[in-house]
Length: 305
Image 1 (tube, helix red, strand yellow):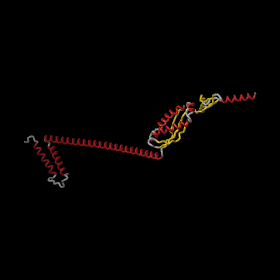
Image 2 (cartoon, rainbow, N blue to C red):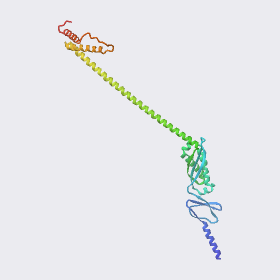
Image 3 (cartoon, rainbow, N blue to C red):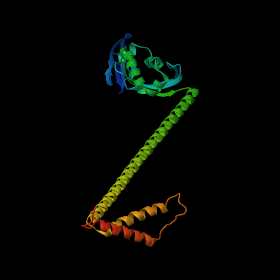
Image 4 (cartoon, rainbow, N blue to C red):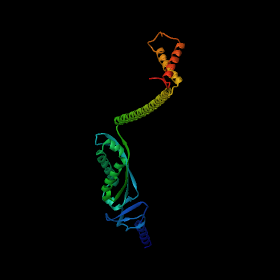
């Protein structure tokens, strides 16, 4: 009797321990009763019915990461590239993640690979290389919608490396070099053009200044001639008035000046080599004196016309 009681007590303790389940933080357990899902155990201490209930699936509800291995993809312009990436997801509904899909990680990974090929295959190589954020966003939207029935949330999809073939990389390098040379040529031509414009502008300003200087010089020369003409006119007028008043010295000065000017022109003429002087200088002065006497006689008050 005592042995039977001990056995019963040991069985009771075993059943109690079998019915107590401790769930760690970041995990959730599903409970199955005779093979059918009944409820989900939360982190902490939980009780189940021994023998009748059992733990079905142990689900990780922390954010998880899957590594997408390198895949060969053909773009819209028939360029072969290699692409790899990572996927971040989190289980929100452990029951659906456990019983709606088999091998959740494998299913998500294949969805991502398929959609990477679909998205990048619809783009040209230049778009694939320059629109990585757009690709990540499109993949996230499509894959998250597809995995929603499985009780999961796709938080991020990141493309890590995009590797074109070696010959394409070399062609891109040559294209980049040609583009840089083109830009350098354009900048050089623009610099030469700007330099020519500045030189032409400087030449223009120089011509303008020269023209203004020539105009100023002509104005000064004309002004000088005008003043000379005025002086000559004034001198002529003064001589005329002196003659009218009977001033013989004025006549002598006027005739002598004109005679000397004429003689100077004859002496400096290019076609003259020998100058014959028919009279002496004293005779010239005598002639001037004679002319003066004639003028004096002509301007006397009682002279007859």
